[in-house]
Image (cartoon, rainbow, N blue to C red; front, side):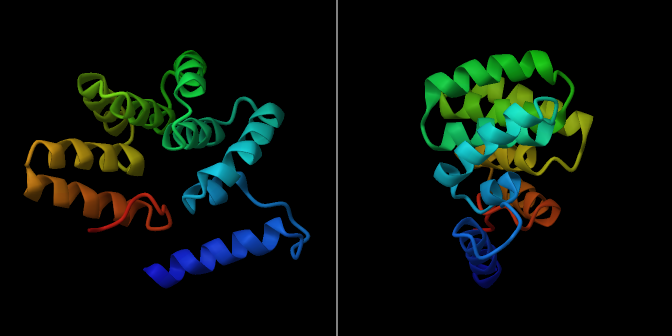
Length: 160
């Protein structure tokens, strides 16, 4: 598992220093967990393709994990209006709610995302985090394994 993350990070690093003809995929950079690098790439992609929910969700999550709360708050509100039924965007909004300690909203958003699409990795992982906080370790473990199964390339979703 560690080697595959290393390989992805190396590929992204090589492509960002110009050894590849193709520009890096901003969502792939986001999945490596390098949010600082991903944010400007995602912002540029969002400007080019504002209707892409994958980019919107990745940008919101990246801002959250970099602690850019004011920007994340504004984007969360905008995403709620622009993508009201996209499970990945709803899960990213749940991550923001979790980050600001609004656990009730986080739980509601994660549940809503899972209801729309059962295999929403970040929503499953968000529920895992909530269950773990509630000392529901067995249920949490099952959710974490499922999230990792759905998206094994996401560096944030680790099986511990």
